[in-house]
Length: 289
Image 1 (cartoon, helix red, strand yellow):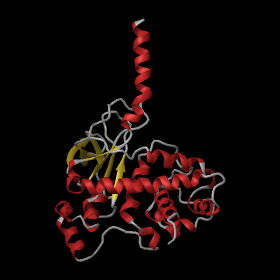
Image 2 (cartoon, rainbow, N blue to C red; image 1 turned 120 degrees about the vertical axis):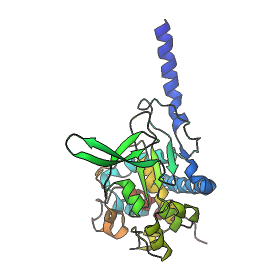
Image 3 (tube, one colour; image 1 turned 135 degrees about the horizontal axis):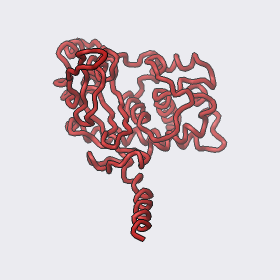
Image 4 (cartoon, rainbow, N blue to C red; image 1 turned 90 degrees about the vertical axis):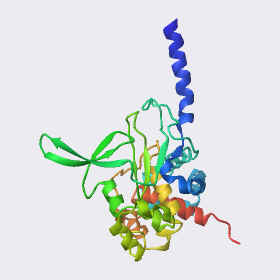
């Protein structure tokens, strides 16, 4: 009897917990722009919702269908796109840091935390059996160690090669993270974060030299780019179906012209095209005056 009662309580808890843990939180490293981020995430989610409604319409509008086929594999239209956009929209609520219970993977999602500096990362030396003494990057929040190298996301963020990156975990004690790189925040006009940029990189930024590759091939690549970046990163943390190709994306895959070269019905199929589709359709859906 006691076992049956405990089982019923567990089932009841599992029925309600996913609604509790959906959402995102903002780390204290972002305190100076917390209200800005809240507004930007809300705006980004409205754009995602518009994109979701566009692919849900039956029959789908000819222009929506045409745009989707420029950016995605035909087999992903409309069901996978709808599922991903819906999953992204479920993350729109702001939660306190540490609000979710640590029993993933019983749950469908974890709260994502947005970070604005790299202070939680430390370099540590470690002796490995096959490689001897190596330097690794340690995430003090999640108690996780990553290999150090010029191609690691941490190094690329620190050196100015990427604007943001996302880390997701299956371990229940680890927190999914969306890292906004300090150098990018500085370029975006939030100069409080210039103190978190290395001196050599900051000197380049002060001279107007951008180390990372900001999209510049077409206007749509950089249209409302802060929102574009947020949509891109949130799509990485969505507990939903994956796009068909699910291949590692390169910087070139994220550009409008490069995606179009793959031909209709092929698409880049990545976070970049999810952001592009959302931004383009939101722009097209604005009533003309």
